Image 1 (cartoon, rainbow, N blue to C red):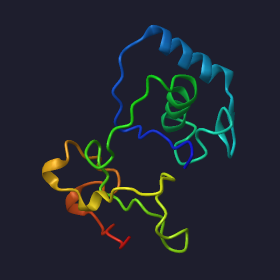
Image 2 (image 1 turned 180 degrees about the horizontal axis):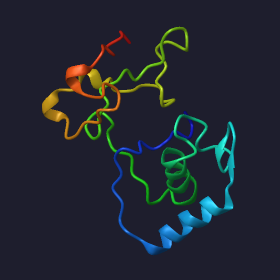
Image 3 (image 1 turned 90 degrees about the horizontal axis):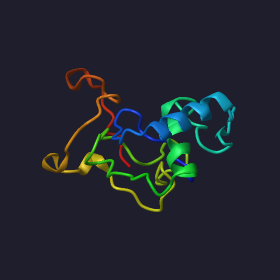
Image 4 (image 1 turned 135 degrees about the horizontal axis):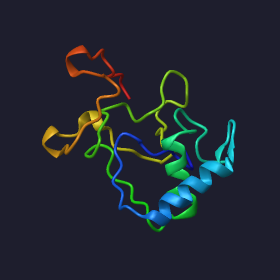
Length: 132
């Protein structure tokens, strides 16, 4: 995706009253457009009207010099399939990049933290290991 969302389950922020006030102003302005997102391009995805979209808009559009993207396979890893499948442009990376790391192949010693949203609890996980 050209303007992907932020994974709201893992954020590292430096407290700033000015940034907080700007966030409040963005929400009160309410420039969230259904089907297009914050500012018309950030948040047209699941969770986009909330933190995933507004954070993406704040750091992608208003303050790109302050946002840093971390390696999704090492920090807050979902251990998910990074490719579209089932007839939806098979082989294309979900984030719109030409190539993407398959987190299912990342060595566990290289993973610093995980996000249990995909499988919920590891002992209850249904298989999400579709071939890429």
